Image (tube, rainbow, N blue to C red; front, side):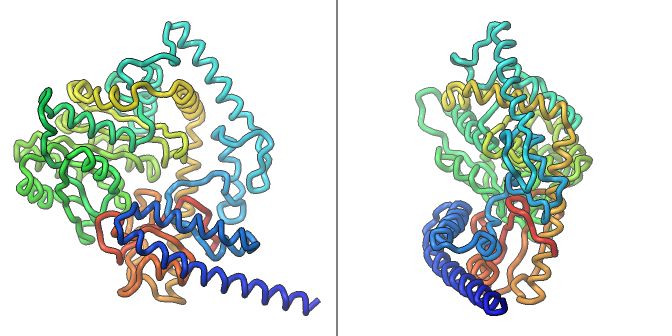
Length: 473
């Protein structure tokens, strides 16, 4: 028996050593891609996925792979991978409760009933019949491309219940996730500024760094220039009135400010006082700058704090200059469903932005709209789902912080761990001099995204708290 155990130990050690070599090789191949300017988040995620596939091809056991390769590049909870051991048995039913688990699907030892999955499909048919009775056929063009009014009414109801603020359904446009809403907004903004038959106008939009860089890439691709504000750790990586004033001085023709209210990657969230100070600065300067508020992570932290932020963002005088982009990707872990929306604080802004929808999507997919409506009906009937998802984020956020501190005691890789205030689904930490995401991956197997991916320094790393369970520490 002891000889069998010894062989198993030797085999396990050999597997771990092989994976360590493969991590170093994968890092060496990925580094030039990052240096070439390829999308860093995608590069890191693809590196990890390819490495896991290569390990499986070599017959390395799944439990060893999961211990030696930890993918923290993408921020979304995979509810099919919830662990009864590392997350808790109370969370393994989430996929079933959300209507995502198929009948008979086994998740964490739990066999899903699939009742809510069936309910969603049945509700989609009921909704289509209801719409047809109102002479609304989603199978033909929605002329504006902004979504059925029945869908937008449901989004408005969700916003009101979640954050205690109101929008007219006609001021809400549906989109294929928040990124799609932003892409359409930039297109609409360009169209609203451009004179008929004239050249593309040249104007800047203000973007923070570190910050989510895809909206900036979208804007740049259609000719909008960037005016960067490089934020500081001592300011919680937030735009301050002073830094905004300096950006306006440098770019007096700026048309908009992109503001992630709960920041990706830093996981710091603006509080009401910080938001109020920015609006007051714009008012003092007589600026007509639009504030594009990205709400992607609103709903992942404390609900009372989120309501306070939303009240400030929609206060009189603020609402009229603000565009609000939201989705259910993070707050309800529905990344693949692409349920997004944008709400306009002023009807005239909404009217100006219609070309961004009409000339891109043309018409939103019928089955997608029906599923979106059915899912919102489910969430309205079962508000406890959102709280359970927030509770799971809290658990993983705390556990990841403890895990990193424990690793750092054995191997000092971080100078500062968990700099954030818990505002999103990420951990934002600073590495010690000489370390980067690749040395972190080589030594620990934890894959993150470098600060350079967000227009900042590569001695910072963003780690997702959501995508996979965190072992108990």
